[in-house]
Length: 139
Ligand SMILES: [Zn+2]
Image (cartoon, rainbow, N blue to C red):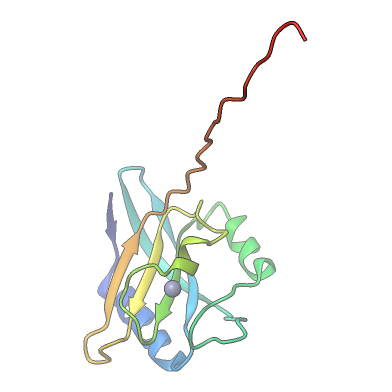
């Protein structure tokens, strides 16, 4: 699934994330989910409420919910920056409560002169395992 964004939107994301340093920046991307591709149109910053904002981000659901309820500008992505790590989801990122949002955006500022933006789709699977119990008849 391709993800399209304008240079202007890209620049806005990089500028906001650079300004938020040394903290992780976070926000949402709204746009259109065409099913086979996503067209990003706008970025809205959200507050990072984490205790250690340089290493993680925490969003207040009450700040995010109004965006999720706005059908005119659907949320197509959840964004955060990695001030000093690669643009790869961390273990903690994979435990996100927001995996149903169609895409997960990470901007790495590891090399400040070469920001790297990557977009992922997260899939949460719950594996059910089984284990046979001894069955004893006639007792
Ligand atoms: Zn992260």
